[in-house]
Length: 441
Length: 191
Image 1 (cartoon, chains in turn yellow, brown):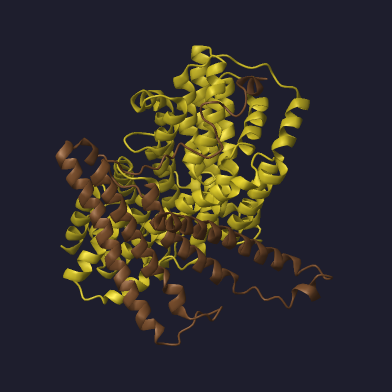
Image 2 (cartoon, each protein chain N blue to C red):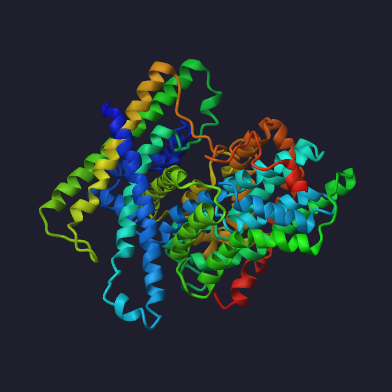
């Protein structure tokens, strides 16, 4: 009963278009004042302690690092390197776009940032070379989504934060702790490479069928030069993943180090940015970080309320009592997340849904890391289709195309992503094999 | 005039905290690794950086509170606007106004709760675990940030009432990345 009231209130408030963080907070306040006897002081305290956690601070650091990298330089050199490697195959620049997006995704934790960084250079270049505009826009919009699947990924950190405090019991009744940021990052590597490969295949096939232009083959010398020029950017992958895996840094420290590193290469090594641009980058990053941290604060409040009312446990018991197994459950989860992806952006969905889904999934024997990767892939799909696909909006701004036209342009790759989603859902080993092989699970 | 100073202060505060937090953690990590080098050990060992994590967390909580207020002004707080945008003129205005005033209401309530909490805390001698500064100073960001955010919501609501326009954050716009003129000639990519 109380869960029905909570969700109805939340949905009604959200539909008025108010910021999701405010809708979450107002729901909690209303419920606490009218229905329960939780002291309101604990609410004020939660507003502070909700984000009083060093792991969460990886989010602003990764946003800052990403913003330094988006400013030209690194992306352009990665594009040149990718072009020299795969430009002579069918799909030429399109294929290079997929590869460049995958490379950039490995240094950036956000999808729209990847679309901006790669798309603003790649899309005009593709049009100039004789590709139809829709083809370029389709490739970059969907490949940009790799940003949150290939580590580092802001959405993965949010998933770990959102499920961190949950109490979840596996089918045998043992307490299961949530996935760590390190586990999630390593788990994202294989699915990320697979999706990049599948998107590349789709690009290749479409280009081969329509006989789009190819580039002359680059010599190994040219490839070496292109590689050397972008090696400073690629080193960042080593710092983040290598550092976390080798236990040199915690994910948050790795994020801080990569922010400083990104600043140094943007300002002193590549010199794409002068020192007087730095305050603007800082301000923009603080703005974006504060928005996400503010949603997290209120989402923590919301999941505190839900835990207080025992709602996740009730749902878990109800689901097991009607005899749903994990196969059906994950199908329902996918549909639910895809629908949510129609109206909300990724971090809010993960923050609201993950604390609810996590105990249920664990009760059905689903691994926390598997659920996390599945949610991330769902968020990727949501970013690429209207009405609120952030990648679509960013790409439509760059390509000067309408959303409707872009939606049509995107569908071959979107279909590929949906097939991939099916694979990730029902083959847990895609997500679990690498962390297990490295002894992290 | 007063508003302009407030705007600048807000921007300077959050940008500075962002930079400082990053540097502090970077220095703390470097410090940990440089300790392993024997000739640096005597110089670095007396420097105690165990408070770095705590300070970084507090700085980001402050960024979150004041940045959220700044975010209202830049329109970065997104909501579910699919339905609202379908509404006809008078209804749309009412709903938008309702959501803005709800924001102001919520932040005012939180600010007052925070103020009460901080006031109660100020009479105790509770200090933070590592840095041992009085807790109420750290928690001061809840009332200050929330009241500022409330003020920003009212400001946006007032300008919406006057002009019918809302601040809108453009995700496709990145300072320094020129979208119209590619940063590189197409010829350079294609060689």
